Length: 565
Image 1: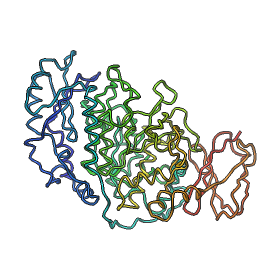
Image 2 (image 1 turned 180 degrees about the vertical axis):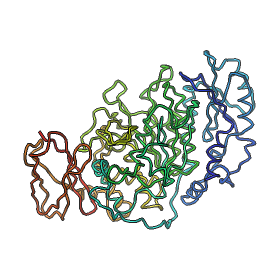
Image 3 (image 1 turned 120 degrees about the vertical axis):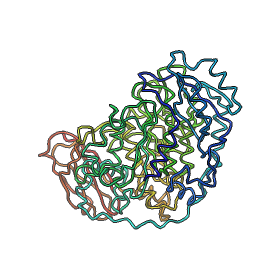
Image 4 (image 1 turned 180 degrees about the horizontal axis):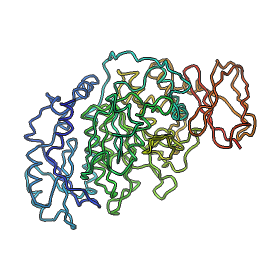
């Protein structure tokens, strides 16, 4: 741990940040020609990557290249001393740039830009939204040089199969995890042990003290955190709880009350969003965060954020930009996948707004762009729409009526693709745990192929709702995509809405199953075996509202929402 702490701190030791801003600091990006004098070589990656990251690079034959080397300290030092009102905001080793800012209301002056451009190691100085398209395309094109070419079989410790009371362990999260057939992974013992998940978000209010995160802290699974913005507020005191809610959907482990989608994984938290403004500078902060996630060897990353328009309209993106090649954030997300990280990005909540479409960086071709449905698989109207040219979104997850743990230390419910994404991200880590010899891209492909509309992509849910039991068998090699589509657990329930008696109907020849009934708060009200093809469930004594039927058996789960009138 001491070495890793050095790594996280050292990468930013030369950055000089201001005291925080009510609005975005005026900034520009300085592109560097080389990395002379950084003191590192690609033959010694342990100097700038964690041991875990280095081992993963070697296991998957992912080359360490010049792009992985740190920025030149001498260049950083020079830029930080140019002017008393000028300071370094952030950097990127992958793109070899430095973002500098100023407190001056007119921004970085023309004369200062001219001085910077005269340095022989500087190739250009640009406003943050004006990096030439040709250069962005060049950066994207070079990604093919860094890519996994196949895994070396690993020998992880065999997971411990779940032996607890399966009726109650997941609590309020059971219906939403079951919607993705993810309980099967947990039952097999794949709940994220040994997997590293990076959470890149805006604020993690009181995660260091909330009781619901007690297991995360006491078990040592909260491995580290880093603020990459210029705000100096203490990390867990930023008055923003979005990241806290997102983290809970994956990382909380309170059996009987709430168990997340990856309850035994290790977590690193990165704050890349500033609560005081919407500015394209946040895309550059995202790049810093995803590079740090790569440096610690993150196996999965959750990105419940997106960029479309900003306070300064000159910075606004257009639909033309949504190709994964017109933003440093999208290119960095793509680069992270190539370096061995399953990047899950929220599609956005623009489905009923003027923008309408998904945002950046969910447009990166290799990432999983996640749309939202409810626990009954109905499409959420707010979920950003897709584009048939770039085939985004990729999949859908439960982001409408999603259960999470809030700042009052209780289970709450909310809407947003921000909540759909961590539910899926946690399960991708659990799936990869089961197949450590597979590459990140192979796992992503299996997740897409397992979805219920894989052969019928649409702009609302992409390939549809992924089925993690099927993805498991696809990776195992004993189930084809067509067989996965046919093998889905099916049942009908009627009438719905119901007043007194609900009938449950299964196809002929269905194996023995168990049905559980949950209320809207995730409390289990009924558990009973299912035999035959038809059974009845009494609703007459239940109050009006929404309920969820969870049918389980044979390593599969299926969920239906039932409305009591």
